[in-house]
Every structure is written in structure tokens, then in C-alpha cells.
Image 1 (cartoon, rainbow over the protein chains, first blue to last red):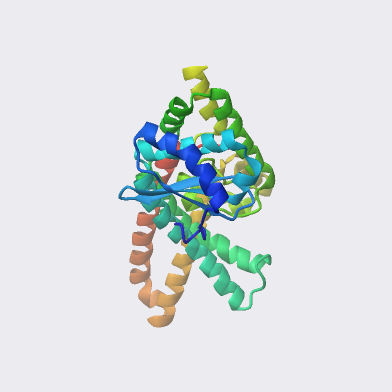
Image 2 (image 1 turned 90 degrees about the horizontal axis):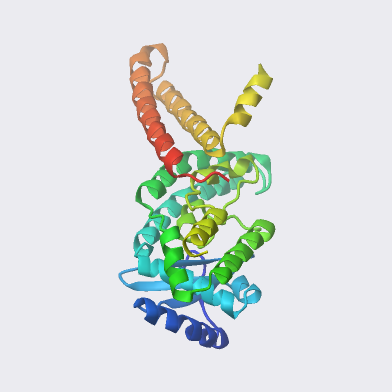
Length: 232
Length: 80
């Protein structure tokens, strides 16, 4: 997964800041200290991967540009909570398998382009990809639904018990979500939706319709309401 | 007629439309399987029992998968 997103290690400045924020969280939760990576993305987003007690928290470069220190701490707390919750290994494997299956549709689109059906934005390769997505989305979605663990509400609770700032939790997630809704320019692999902190998939047109089969993360409003009902 | 189809299409939820298009994609594959059989074994009516049995097997597996998917999606998917 780290190779998939071309993750890079942090620069010395960011590494110092992140370790100062993350170390108290991991010791409080009694979890192994995860490695932290960054990847290029147009939006602030984070995910955690790992198996066999070797975990990695991955933050997009945009997260460092947009979020202040408190918000970063909240994001890290949410990701560390997933490790504490124990859902990371299974979701990593599920995302890897489902994501690989979904990627086959891109291969088919490239084959259509190489066969002379036009460029990426032309209708013929897009229809070829749409049909291919129809074939691969169903088994990939079934894998996500049958084996993926949806522990968002549980990990939200663990994160909040750690940071103890409900307002910060609400504002951080809302800010990330708004930014994704307004500025997201890339197509995230639907098979990976389970590992992200915020759902990055949006159904904008008919060509995105298959993404709707993967949206199992509760809506942000629902997550906030659940937290408010418990701690508000 | 087309307005009725459009109306029904608009009533469907996104994941239901996705399942429908997925079904269409799998039907395209079945079409190519039948075409391949006709070309390889030369003739449609001569190979009708084979085509029917392959189609029936393929369709039953597909419909069974779609029913399971519908049940899972209805329970777990979040509507946007």
C-alpha cells in the first residue's frame, strides 16, 4: 500500500513535530509507535496500514499545509485509535486485494487507448473502463463488505477519549471533509475506502456510479452526532 | 415508454444503478462467450444445448451473486 501511494518518509522538521504529537498518544493507547509517511494528494487525508504489529500512518502533504498542530494531533489520534481498535491489519489486506481487482479496469482502459480508441478523456476508452468497472466492482465490493471491518465509530470514540476535545474533533473532520468535497481532483481507488479517515469517494456522474457500492463508512454528520450524543 | 424508463431509473438509488450496470457488463461477457462458442464449434443451432447450459449456469451464478450483493449493500451501504 505504501508503494501504491508512492509514500515518502517525513522531512526532519515535520518528523520532529509529528513525533512530539504522536508519542504521547501511542504511549497512552499502549500501541507500537507507527512509522509516519507522506504522499502527494490535492486534499488533506490520512490512512493507516500495517500487519503484524508494524504499522504506518500516512498523511497527505496537503495535511501539513492546511492543518494546524492541534488538528494534526486530532488526525493522528484518530489514526492511532484505529491501531488500538485492531481493525488495521484486516482492512489493509482487504484494501490491497479489492484495490488490485479495481485496478484491472484501468489496465483495460489503457489497452483500449493503446488499441487506438482515443485518449483518456475520449468516450470509447471511458466506456471500456465503465464496462470493465462493472465486472470488477462487484467482486471487489463483495470482498470489502464481507471481510472489511467498519470500526469508524469505535475508533472515533477511542480518539476522543485520548484527546478529550470534542470541538476539535468535530472541526478537524468537518474541515477535512469540506476540503475533499470542494477541492478533490483525483480519483481514489474505491477498494481503499475502508482505510481512509474520511470517505474520499464522491458520485459526481454516471462514470462514478460504481463508487457507491463501496461507501460503507458512516456519514460525517452521523459520526459527529454519535459523538455529541455520547459526550455532548 | 422512454420517459417511464427514465422515471424508474431516477427512482433507483446509486448502488442499485451500479448493480444494474454491473449486470449489463456481465451480460456483455456472456454475449462474447456465446459468440466464441458459435465460432469455435461452428454453428448456433447445432450447439444450442451447450449454449443454453452455459448461459443457464452463468446466469444462475450471476443472479445468486447479485442477490447476495443486494442483501449486503442494503444493510451496510451509506446513502450520500
